[in-house]
Length: 380
Image (cartoon, rainbow, N blue to C red; front, top):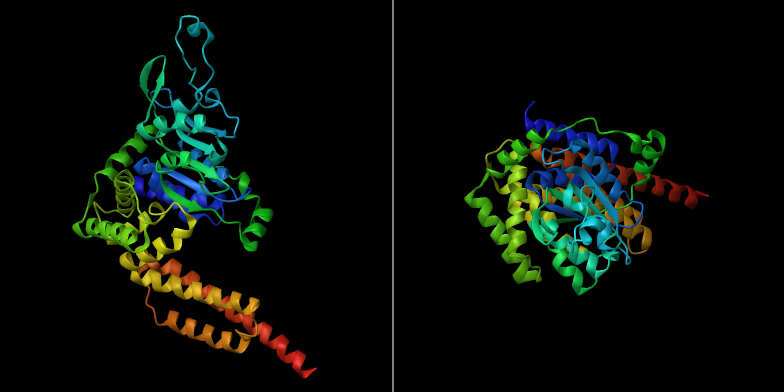
């Protein structure tokens, strides 16, 4: 089996265990290949930590360097360095050596989860900067390398103070995790998906080979120019800027996307993978998403815009029925359906297109039922 196919199979399996998180799971694959970190924003109970743990199950080997697969900690205002780096060795302390017993802690883990990171105190936050960015840490008066490959941080709210800023930039990709739909909750209740184990397993050699191949992908001139255009447009027109560090890192995610699709050179379409990298403030997400989709895949942007407009229309009708009467909503939904039918989706956009068609159809059916009820009331 080609390594690309194995990663694709892993993505499918994690999607079966973790509902309605397709974009994040796909990007976690890319982040694994590119050795970059992910930040997950969302209210409690939406499965942020669970998704990270399920993904890590595929890499549960002990490394040749004796590294552990996974380390997780829930941070708080009282978190101490020893909870992250391990207890201080008393025997070495007697020899005037400050040594943390880190074998089962962050410095010796390949994948990490820093849960509720925005609740941590400044000391705890500062202590993880070097390990997760430089992949080094100080112990016993010396600098040591860590096996950290990539990791997650989660929060219920966005960064709101200056001492989070430096750390925030170390997390290249940002996602908002929403609550499950009613359909998703029903499926979760009936199938108990959170008990599903991840059976696809990777070896250390497979991971190294995949990363070597993915990071050898080159950026085409058009892809390179497009990334620069996105950066400049967001900065000049919207005041949204990213650091040089982050720009370099997101290019590795674009390479990983190309590799997963069997390419040795990244094309413009692969730059779509950079969407979560250009925002930290959730208010910037729609601006970033719209611009990058428009530049990288115009057809995808048209499809998504029709779907969003249809959903917004029905929501407006519920909140302002006088301004948005059902008869007008029905007519506009017909126009949306007609616009979709005129699109011949590319293979890459087919899944998104099919979902948009289903969504508009369901909205039409819902409005038709409401109109029927309204007519019956008038008759009575």
